[in-house]
Image (cartoon, rainbow, N blue to C red; front, side, top):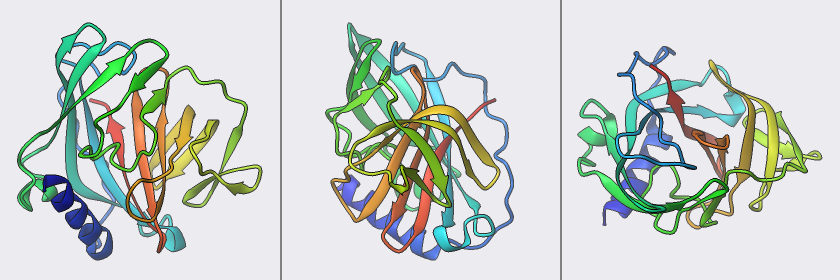
Length: 219
């Protein structure tokens, strides 16, 4: 039920997002980011949510004022228990998503196995159960407005590539790995942008060209 509620609120937010000036998020408390290759209790990554539109990519950019905290709450061998929670000032929290979402991952240096990702705000669309942290990069990716392309075609179908630069409003990702996703729900294109340790961005595009995503922010 919480998953359905999150999806309904997400769809409404994508459709009805109000205009606001673009401001970078406020500094956050210093933490050690969640390391997907070596998760440890106490690690946390703060993500802020952004929205824009493929047809008005730069001018439509805005932060939604939602902040999501991803934390490692328990570790047993290669199994780590994760928790996602919205901060009390987040619109999602005010709309009723107040309980943390919890799921486990199995991790080693080469991959993170995400078998229970359906309630995750970061991974809910991801059709694969494995985030390959040390993937070979046979493909070079290019940005085409709101999308990534590979050899002049849309980057879809669970492919992995090397991303030199990806810019969304004031946000910039450089020299990262990106995986495209076979979505399990809704009609969307989506990417996870990461390196061998950390998830830096979760970027989704729904059928009408509306964009939303989460980007990790530093202290």
